[in-house]
Amino acid sequence: MPVRLLVTADLHFNHARSRPVAEELIRDMNRAGGDAVLVVGDTGISEGTSIEECLSQFNGFESRYFVAGNHELWTKQGDGRRDAVQLLEEDLPTRVREAGWQWLEGNPVDLGGVSLVGSVGWYDYSFAEPSLGVPRRFYERKVSPGAAARFSEFADLFETFTPDDLERTGSPDVPRHAMEIVARWNDGRHVLMPQEFTDKTLLDKVLRRLESDLRSVPEGQRIVVGVHHVPFRELLPPSHGFQWDFARAYLGSERIGALLGQFLQISHVFCGHSHFPAQAQVGGINARNLGSGYRLKTFASIDV
Image 1 (cartoon, rainbow, N blue to C red):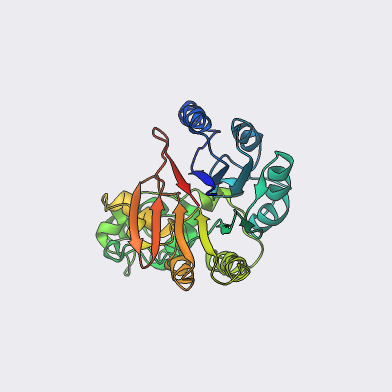
Image 2: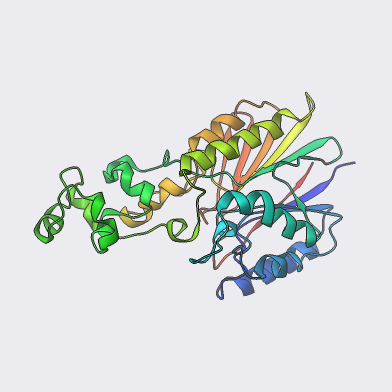
């Protein structure tokens, strides 16, 4: 007998503008009903009680599964901050289980003959827009050239750092139009990486766990995957201009999609993070970006 699975993402329950819309969506999902529900990240930041408050709103589902997003890895500045790996492997799984949900990453489940697998994913700038001409070192620091020029803490990103140079070109390898991009990716301020970790290191670690989870599925059994970050270029938002396109570097990674493409058992992949809805058939995979944003929330329903 098929199991009805409802999937959503990016509820941002700790955001004042987003919370009423999230509450309405959850009521819609409760009314729609189903056997299982999967939340694919960005329910709320790791501190405070927004995660528990959000998850407590769901009712009527026999099974409830959770995958973290980047916002669950945010912590406040100061002593005693927990790093991203500690949050993913210790704090968040404990909190989610105490809330009565199942932590999916590292714990694939069998839904009546179909396996459900989850991962936070991450990014490595492989989706960065080349036409912007932004050198990789700016992406690594999660700040655009135009924004970096405004803060002395980023002075080292420029090979020449005088007011005249910055106003004119910024640096020999920074195009003039790149200086017009004024943006920061807030993971740089709120996600604490373990010592010696980079975004690539974290993605490597996450992908090793995801591959292990996928390989643990019995041969021939169909797989449904929920991954917070975007795994396929086909699910990215269209170009929005310099400011928005800078953020594409942080939306996901081609490596996630390349890994998923190795497993012919995968029938469906759901992601979020970009706040832009998209659907695509990628090989044999029915891929969908749920596209929930701050003003509009969505969910999907499939029988597995």
